[in-house]
Amino acid sequence: MPEPVIVREIARALGESATLTEAAPRMLAAVCESLGWEYGALWEVDRGGKTLHCVGTWHASSLQVTEFVEISRTTNFARGVGLPGRVWDSGRPAWIPDVVADGNFPRAPAADRVGLHGAFALPILRGSDVLGVMEFFSRDIRQPDAALLETMMTAGAQIGLYVARKWAADELETFFRLSLDLLCVASLDGYFLRLNPEWTHVLGFDEAELRASPFLDFVHPDDRAATLDAVSTLTAGSRLINFQNRYRARNGSYRWLEWAAAPSVDQGVIYAAAGRHLLLVRIIQAVIGSASCASRSRSSRSRVIRRSRSLTAW
Image 1: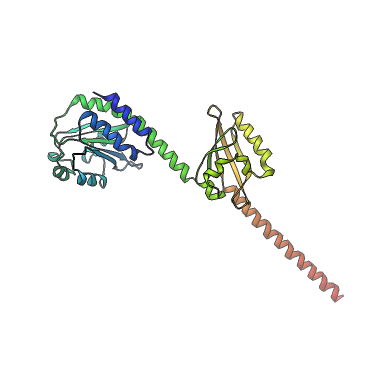
Image 2: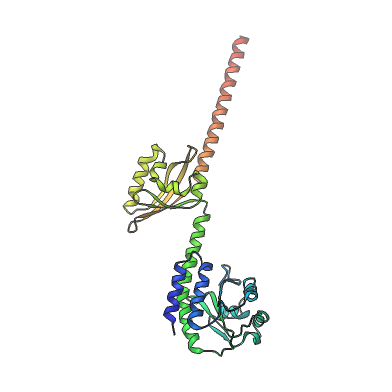
């Protein structure tokens, strides 16, 4: 069995694709073309663990399966329902000689119309947890092949390792993009390597502009010495918490930021997050300060007026 080839091709597809959805057709093609199956689909368990939904398909160019693909993409399966659902429920591969005659295959009418019959599916595992299901179909009625199922069970466990890493990376990427804090990766020699979109929202510079110059160029002149000391602390391998400095915005104003940072000295980078709550605190302080000054000014004017009236009366 070409198990190592299948796993290698799937790992390559995952490594070269930005998302699991993008990788799915290549993953499915690796299995179908190696084992002689004509249609494949990848199903993912949603993050809430409630349903399976189809994230990608592949089919041989000679196969006309548009209707079946559309039904698959618009159908969600609960545990135990349909071929994907029963594999999710059992955590084991499953084989159906002819899906058209199977009592637990809701897509049977569509499969019959497009000429799909034999099918098998395997779980994508992380330990004992089912992360997803890969299903494969043939136009022929096929009897169960125990050796194939065992081989694919082993392959499925290995595929699960790659898929779990991909999902974890996707989740981290989503967190990075959506965070309301300013997140960044910087080099130990003082340049930003990566920044999340919130930097542009807060400072007005795009990522290319922020990466083009040393990050010290954006720091308020009065804060640069302290910032260099903070970088030295990080370069020595220590973490940094509650460090404050001001960064220049595109309009020339400065924004107060409060930092937490940790170095990876071996990799030569700093991972850092700057909270914006300090900016809000400074704004509130400024507003309170202005109000206080105004109040003192009004009070002073009142005293002058009272004193003037007193002198006039005297």
